[in-house]
Amino acid sequence: MNIEVISGAVTDIVCDAIIIGLFEGEQPSGTTRVIDKALQQHVSEIIRDMPGCGKYGETTIIHTFGAIGAKRIILLGLGKESEISVDKVRALMAVAMRAARKINSQTVATAIHNESDKLEANLTAQAVIEGTIMGSYQFTYYKTSKKDNPGIEKVIIIENDTANMDVIKSKVHEGKIIAESVNLARDLVNHPAQYMTPTKMASHAMQIAEEYGFELTILEKEDMQQKGMGALLAVAQGSIEPPKLIVLKYEGNPDSQETIALVGKAITFDSGGISIKPSQKMDEMKGDMAGGAAVLGAMMALGQLRPKVNIIAVVPCAENMPSGSAFRPGDILTSLSGKTIEVLSTDAEGRLILADAVTYAKQLNATKIVDLATLTGACVIGLGTIYSGVLTNNQEWCQTVIDAGQIIGEKMWELPNDTEYLEQIKSSIADLKNTGGRYAGTITAGLFIGEFAAKTPWVHIDIAGTSDAEKDKGYNLKGGTGVGVRTLVQLMKMLEKS
Ligand code: BES
Ligand code: MN
Ligand code: ZN
Image 1 (spheres, protein in one colour):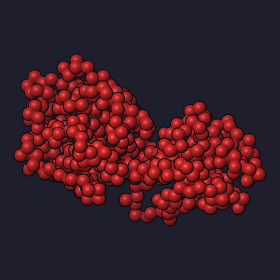
Image 2 (image 1 turned 135 degrees about the vertical axis):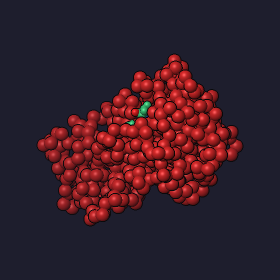
Image 3 (image 1 turned 90 degrees about the horizontal axis):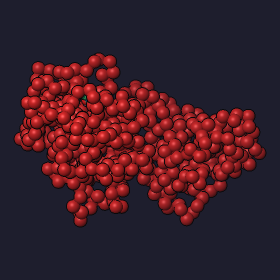
Image 4 (image 1 turned 90 degrees about the vertical axis):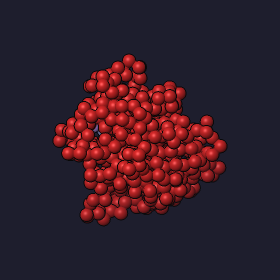
């Protein structure tokens, strides 16, 4: 998708469709008013006839018959002005772009980022592009008959504040980079497990490393054996797919001692192993690598934005399968940290691979850790699909992560981390056991990983409920959402400034 920022009269812009906004219960203002005038108050008349067209997410197509440069207008309901937010603009743009695609528009213009004083124009311009690119996402890899509709080829952002032009242009550029990285993460999630094996994850990481000049290390099974990654190896041992541990390094600030580890769970398929899952919805477990996908997506963006921070991405990849060689309930594993783990369920595998990944990140001198994982069904029950669950051992670091998400519209809710919960994961025969029972399942799973982070500031984000969408909604389409990419990118930008 080609994106242009230009200045000029909105009525003169030649395009297939121009998106203009309307707040619920309000008269046309800004761009909408200028266009209303050019159309001899026809827009006002339509609003009078159909008062619902200002409702949040409503789209109304108006043909202009040559009255202005745009062939059609997409009147976009913005909802109540008092409730507008940057993230709502992101979602609204996605809806509008899908409406534009439906009517075969190839060139689409908009000035929505200047629609309200309540919205900061620069951040909103970025959100407009993010919403556009994320909302136009389609996963057609396995479709044999691609549609004739070529999709939107060009988006024009109209900006008449010439003094602010350069800033808007750079925000638009940033938005494009971030949204395309989100879409990469979605692709990785949407591919079936038969394609997206640990080996394929590693080859995608290799492509990213080559393109953006990251130092790449892939630990093979033999390397893991030699280092003693007993937890990661146990999870992988039932599958014919060999495990991989991906490490990408980016040094953006050589003068700093700080290195941030981004750790992502990548179980390319989670059958549950010997503690096998029920067959219903088991297909969704192809998405159990969404944490790893988010980390790779974030690295793709960071490779282009190049913030002044030091980052290591650590993505443990394995397939969790039942077989004659699979690990079993009752097995006792020795993790890389030396801590021993009693396996009570082979389906609580995410925390096992993350235990070794977090330990390895510390061995690589990480000073702060964030991990993302589709870790627990309990998180989906507790928080649904709106909030990701968060656990931490460091309140300040946690708040920074949650703030980053808040700014870009990924919601996170911190759960309690009282040491009393650790009782549930103490084993009578080993140091830890890998499940703490049904009560507080998200908390005990998170705190299990925390035992390996130990004193290093660490935040865990459980994205089990947020990484996959059941249906199209706003800028998310059915399937992988790419959640976490934008939070991680924003977080790195914030660390650069602090
Ligand atoms: N990958 C699952 C968690 C999951 C469930 C993600 C639903 C997305 C949607 C994880 O490995 C798992 O199986 N967790 C178990 C833990 C239990 C055995 C302690 C769970 O949540 O049931
Ligand atoms: Mn599992
Ligand atoms: Zn899993």
